[in-house]
Image (cartoon, helix red, strand yellow):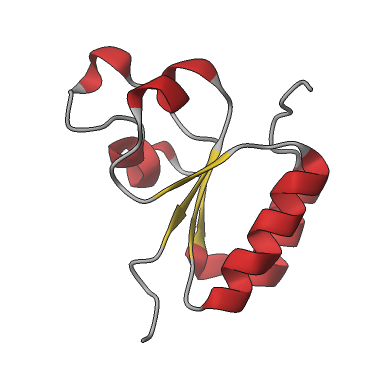
Length: 98
């Protein structure tokens, strides 16, 4: 299986799921998601960062990512091997209301 990039259509679907304010593509907003505690020597910019507010949004994200063959990783602490190898989306639960 070959991983795919995030397309404008995928971004539109993400905005429907998360709302415009919770879908980030601007480099200055997502740069901190491009590396882990090991530092920036292995950094790779995600294509998009989404901020989930509930479990249903994560379910919808994973269905979309699976259908489109786009890897997803969680939160601020991105694993180095994922950062270095793939195009990907980051799902942050920082806005999750518990």
